[in-house]
Amino acid sequence: MTWESSRPYRTKDGFRISEREGGSQRTVASGVCRADADLRKMAAASDMYEALYTALPYVEDALLDDGYKPEAVRAAINKVRAALSQGEQG
Image (cartoon, rainbow, N blue to C red):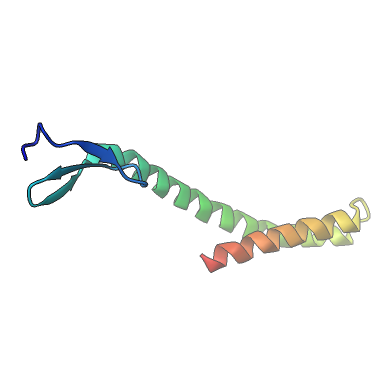
């Protein structure tokens, strides 16, 4: 089978595969953008985790302020803690 006669197809992760004699080849150009996007998402997730961790004490302090509804503050605290818990699990 020659390169011209091979038939490329896409995998679930967005790479193009072209079958050749002796195996298959991943086309780098189609996967680079996805890998870069994944790295940006991981960096953003790390930043968001740190921001939530920093903000939690301030949200908890809002329970002591009469200007906020206690049930709304508790709901916000629970959401922040749940997000932090998910971030710790992976």
